[in-house]
Amino acid sequence: MAQPTGSAPLTDTPLTCAPLTDRLLRGWLRCRRRAWLDRHGPSGERLWSAHRALALQDQLRSFQTLLPSRPGHGEAACARGEAGVVGVRLRGRTRDGQAVEAHPSLLQRLEGDSRWGAFRYRPVLARQGRRVTREHRLLLALWGRLLAEHQQAPVPEGLVVAGEGRRLERERLALSSGLMRQLDDSLERLGQELDHDQPPPLVNDRKKCTLCCWRGLCDREAAREGHLSEVSGIGGKRRELLLGLGIARLTDLAATDPERLADQLEAHGEQHREIAATLVAQARVQASGIPERLDPAPALPELARAPGVLLYDIESDPDARDDFLHGFLLLPRGADGCWPVANVPEADGTTADGTAADGFAANGFAANGTAADRAGRYLAVLALQEHGEPRLWARLRSLLARYSDWPLLHYGETESLALVRLAQRQGASEAEVLRLRSRLVDVHARLRRHWRLPVNGYGLKPVAGWLGFRWSQPGVDGARCLLWWRQWRHWHQDRVRGRHSPGRLQRIFQYNRDDSLATWAVARWLLDRD
Image 1 (cartoon, rainbow, N blue to C red):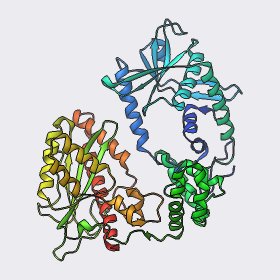
Image 2: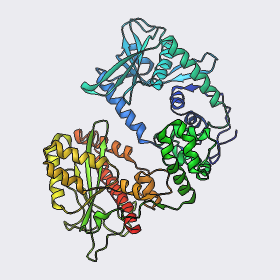
Image 3: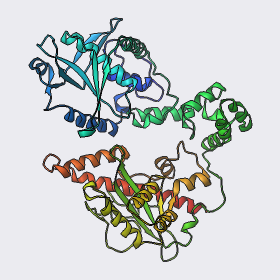
């Protein structure tokens, strides 16, 4: 079998020997390339993703709310007529005779008749997101079809659940004949594409690729071929427009006349015309590897006379709308008037210059070393919901007042919006809110205003990574941090089953501190350019 460019050798097992599965169907519905890689891709290239673990956690909580008791397992549990059953393997064939196999997340007992007795089952799927998608419908259709054959009883509907406790949403989904025809068509196309000896091309819009276990392999392929999605500002729709104009690669875009491109894109909307010159300029910077200055004025004038800065970063659980950690890194200006260098943390928890790592506490403030304000002092304010917002605001207010003339540097608008809204909810005066707004400095916004960089995105990780910054915990991202937080909360509520979880809180603190150090690395680069 031929192999995709830049990947490890693939197996030469005959392509048609393995059955189609619900997992392959799910992957194909999300990304055709992903399904091919799930079947044929080199296992060593597969990366672990915290998003899968988070989805399984959400599923577990939804099912625990739905069922009155713990579900049974396997065929024996179905024969006993248990209220819920997991671990059942269903087999069948597609309309063209190809083997298909599925493992429903949950089967729920209903009234009726089946080969087991005076009851039958329907499949249950736990939904993430706000609505039922084509992926959910086709998965339930597959489960329902195979289950009907297995239990020898019709399955006219499936159930979609989301949330937990009193917030559990239930939505019945009819498994209609039209949906079954869509399933047949999808399975046929899936089988045909899996038989190819080369994977499908990269998708147009690669924003969701960060959630995929094959992101590393595809990122390298995109960089190698100069995929247009590598140009910051180009999503799926704009890539299609550019392809229609014969612009297929980053180098093609860099060689394009911006005025001509603007005229060509104007037919698709004034917004595309306005951004044409920016896209060409961004492609040229990425092709050359040389940053371009956009505004000669100082990017961070607030730091000209400031005695120090507070680097501010929040960690959040977006589903729960919970900003659970407010982290601050205190950086005072040196006695000689110079700012500290941007330290890069090492994997052992110390910075590159040998500064001792921080100690952490579960509540209130956590700080390293002595109480003296020295470079790299980290303060963590943990926001437990049971303590309430008034207590959180009192801590934050006290900290901010202690360093009242220090600007608050953050990366992106999340921190400024969250802090200002918290102050307003807690009754801060208009003057206090205005003062707070004046201290908040968005390093990301200043960077975009003053510089164009040779990066494929202006998020903190690609920008700080381009500057040479490395996080001390390799492979950690916001999703894994959220997973650690939920695991720690489980330990906090039940210390017996989660007895190994306290260390996760320290890892969250370390990740948050690294984000602050990365923000300072970008800020210090801006200062050095000024």
